[in-house]
Amino acid sequence: MSKRIGYKRVSTVDQNTERQLDGAQLDKVFEDKASGKDANRPQLTAALDYARDGDTLVVHSMDRLARNTEDLLRIVRELTAKQVSVEFVKEGLKFSGRGDDPMAHLMMTMLGGFAQFERAMIRERQREGIELAKAKGVYKGRKPALTPAQVTTLRQRAEAGEKKAVLAREFGISRETLYQYLRADVA
Image: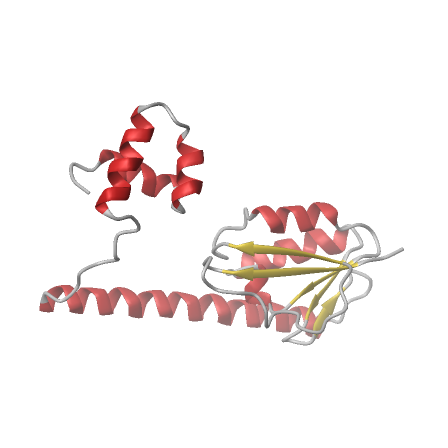
């Protein structure tokens, strides 16, 4: 029996996925809270592994599945090769690999390209804004993830031999951020 599998994604843990796939009839839902720039997302991988011949992967919009055209096309191609359909709700496009409409493929490629371009423009404007703020002396950078007291506790526990991955999860920071705190001279 074929299943309708939902995939939701937001970029940060403070965002929520409530509006994505709202009202859609789904048998199982996978949800990531991770940047779309990385195709190696745990729940995306789980959804792709879970999907079987005859199933449909339902995604709110193309930019929730992939941030660049290459990844988008690859994921859809791999799924349709497994006879798994892919449905993008917002764009109203569905791909099955069974005689798909060439116009739908063109639309997916173009819309994926526009989304990739839009993301690049946002990042460029962000960099320009930061440079301007730095030149004016008003850029303070990102607020620290941890308080000085938390950094002290983190360092003590790391020195005592606690696993870095466990500490990172507990403090709600990435392992790279944890290592930055451990390398820094002061909090």
